[in-house]
Image 1: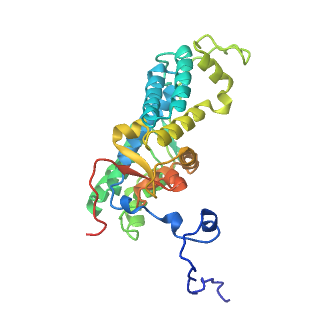
Image 2: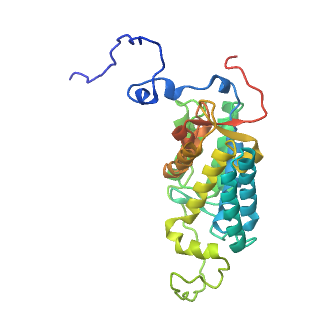
Image 3: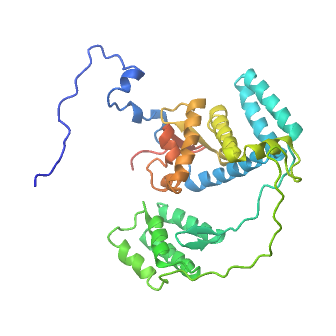
Length: 345
């Protein structure tokens, strides 16, 4: 049977008559290198370390939680941060709008609502539950294995420690294979040695995770249903009341969209978390993001969640440490205050 194989025709590229650059419309009609062009001034600039980006994202997550719960403790710093940068840019119409929004929120919000709701901290992986400490160990192991300084002996040592932890947690073989494979994905561990080494690590793992005892909880009285337009007795602000009405529409997501779009576009590519971690988002062409580009980039966070966090984890193996939101908006996250490095040894 003849193989159905297609090869691009090796025809020479025709030359233009005047040498004038193509317009944006013309660039979209043919394949060009312009979409992948990197600003020469960006070459050699250190990228932000994954751990530094994770810490920044954690700080931003806490801030967004406070915004969604109408906490003045976090609303005022965020609005002050935005107003300061708008004043520096002399965008006084933006400043007036932000001041009006701040005044409304300050009149109806509370200083310190409960930002953390007690939940079961276990995270499901396959059919096995890992608590927060065990999940942190997995994340730390992934960072160590992906580090350039961690050679084969270092990788094996970290993987053996992780296998002991998973065995103690009662992880079954299927879930262990899934987790161990994800740890070494994109690392320098020899691919031909990995299956045998992994099977040796999990040889005594149970085929099925042992069932965990379920604690009996006392029956709670059914809460009294209130009309949709009435807040419950624990609600003390107008913003929280409006939030209750639109809870099913995802008001927390709305705050996230506002926060990431406004701070990235108006504050030179730095959310508050990124500012504290001294990292910055910038386009590959060397320009800062406008509102539309920042809005497009924050939409990539949804794509990262939809891929089971793999879209975020690809910064561990991507050459320029681009996560899925960076691919969407053609951006890169750089480390500030560091000198450029040569592209060759």
